[in-house]
Length: 90
Image 1 (cartoon, helix red, strand yellow):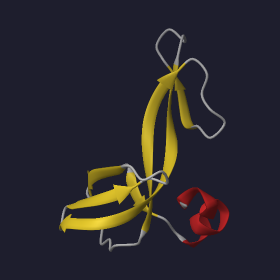
Image 2 (cartoon, helix red, strand yellow):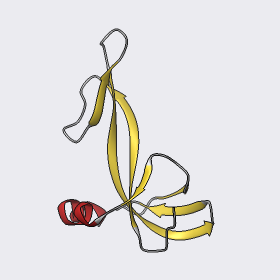
Image 3 (cartoon, helix red, strand yellow):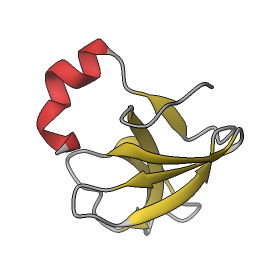
């Protein structure tokens, strides 16, 4: 995936709890049904390209993370993502 500085991306973070949040996607109960595994979409921005396979991304609150571009949880935000979820990027 080709990314450049300033691109908006969506990263799906996987979590587990007894009560999934309203924004939870792909909710699955655990084996005994005590907790749930689910994904939350995080809306971040590319701030630096380290090399062809690694980028530095920044959250809305300024935290920075390194992530590989091959990561299956990562996708580039499309037009509809920006239209419907634009406030979450800033």
